[in-house]
Length: 52
Image (tube, rainbow, N blue to C red; front, side, top):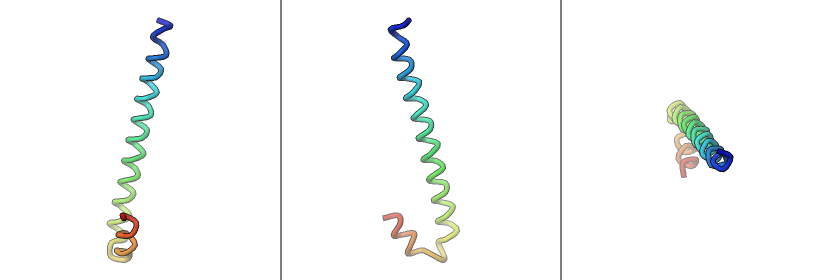
């Protein structure tokens, strides 16, 4: 068991980091979509610049 513990810890860390990254990306994309929908009429040029 002590030999398997570091592997299990590494797997758990990888899973936790993957879930955190997915949540951060989801929040990031949702906020970007909301801001783009609200500011498409006012700041279309600025949104295009930010995308590129």
